[in-house]
Image (tube, rainbow over the protein chains, first blue to last red):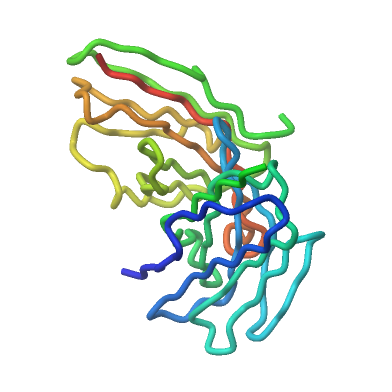
Length: 111
Length: 116
């Protein structure tokens, strides 16, 4: 089946630093979605990407849909303590109904 | 309701007992998913319901696990003869027909199951 490789597995950064994480796959996806999970909660959608090469921003977050449709990255600029959590990428295929999730990147921000 | 509701939020059970976990999806969402998340780990797919189609049960780890969705709405995940390795957070999510891959899932807050 389809698999996503998400890296890094974890990150420990200082408040104010920028963060970058990515997902790669051997399969092509039509959509890439990025979720964030706060402790004790379910994941919440941050950014959705629908077109190869697309670059989308949401506040301090920027995500890109790779030109090959097999990868995506998420950048967080000027990190703050509330950025702490687990970030998941997910790839979708139109009409497939079910997304494929990466294993997550756990982000720790030190004040 | 406004979001996906799961109950109970926490469940402690003795090894060997059966448990039922409930999920109320967003009204009108035809797709419903169950995932399992062990401590600090990723999302393990369990089962997927879409409308009146046969569910995709390919992620259920053993025959002790089963799920049903009544009337296309509420879903119950049942674990029989619980084992300690079943301890995890069980997350439910729902989406509209096309929404899964376009707008993403809406997740509930999960049920934390502890088997002692």
